[in-house]
Amino acid sequence: MVSVIDASPRSLWQLGYQVTLFFPGPNYSMTDIVDARTRSRMMSGIKGKNTKPEVVVRQRLHERGFRFRLHRRDLPGSPDIVLPKYQAAILINGCFWHGHHCRLFKWPRTRPDFWRTKIEGNIRRDRQKMSELHGLNWRVCMLWECEIKGMGEDHLNRVIDSISEWLIGEGSDLSIPHGRTQAVRE
Image 1 (cartoon, rainbow, N blue to C red):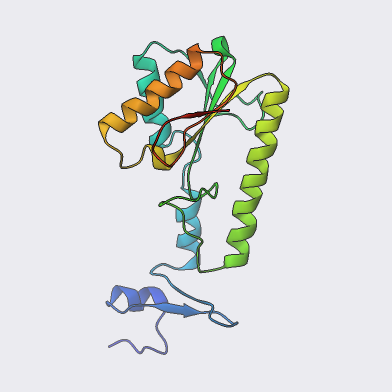
Image 2 (image 1 turned 30 degrees about the vertical axis):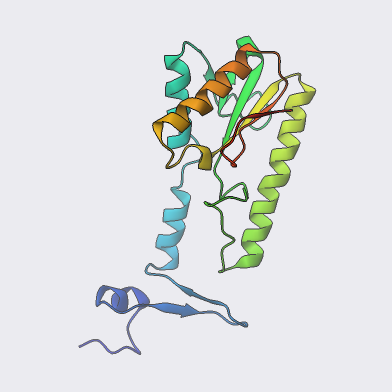
């Protein structure tokens, strides 16, 4: 039998206990099933490139005959998809990491100061990079993860249709809203 006092959170979890870690401060607790080193490794494994939404959009654009470059480092922010022929860049943002107010985003309750600083910093950098792209005369499409994740085939086709029309057309920027209505041209 393992003594609860001498056991590590990991060993207690392996025995089937729910482990709650308490930190100093008011209402500052977190339930976790892994130790800090494992959590750090797991978080560092979250991809920033070649995410599922990116791959889906790239496949659909390629099927429609569009050719592009990926993550061009010579452009501000290394846009996810770059179409030099159309002087266009497509940014596909994860709703959590970029603070999108939709069904996929919730402010974390653990370490709120850290996460607010992190996500607001991402939002500031996004605005700065878009401004820099505009300064270089690039057209920008902002596409959010919630427009692709869990959506049906018809909706995904409408999103790709909007992007295709925008690429061929003369519009400056395209924002695919999370309201799931129609694309808004700016």
